Length: 230
Image 1 (cartoon, rainbow, N blue to C red):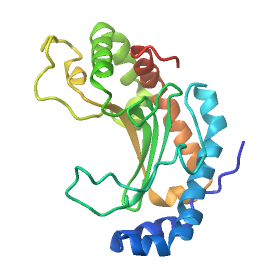
Image 2 (cartoon, one colour):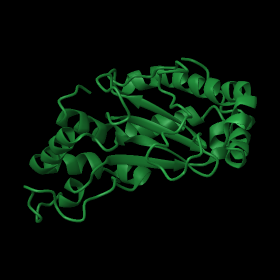
Image 3 (spheres, rainbow, N blue to C red):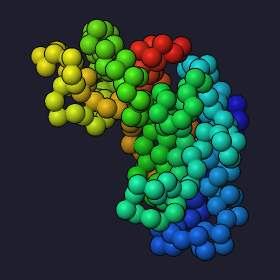
Image 4 (cartoon, helix red, strand yellow):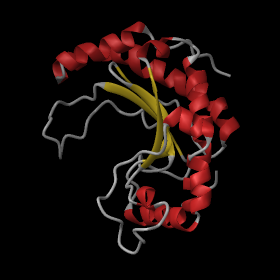
């Protein structure tokens, strides 16, 4: 198992300074620092998580490459945003399903910012055909869905399933269905909150692994709904 000793202190210092200097000139001057304090530590975390993930499922990918791997790019897509600052002010990692090609595939996620840290699993804004498959599975296998998302460990760790919702039931679904509140969701995820200080210790990987294990029943349900192995 690869060694992970925690994120360096400069990881959060870098993002605190980036918030005050979110421009290309500052970033270019600090590009080597970004690589050493952010990219490489996150890639090391991904590498350390790879054997842990294999114990949970062999279908989720941990790719430590700095470009095109599990570590999210720092560059923002500002085409449809009022905020035109070019860089994200947090680091993030997604371990996505082997069949997925983007962030809309089922996967495990880790968000590491100066003011908030969370990690868990789920699927974010799946395409309409996939969303319909998930909703139909929740409707048709409601008991199994409830079992996967209301266990003691799941509730204690995550407090339930989250994800933005429609105000009304989607077309074709009964408003009185027992699982209608989850059927109305457009995303399905379970996230545990952590503290920035915890990320500086080797045990952080243990904390993340434990959360992934508690999210496993929900992840398995979502993958099965999409015809993906888990």
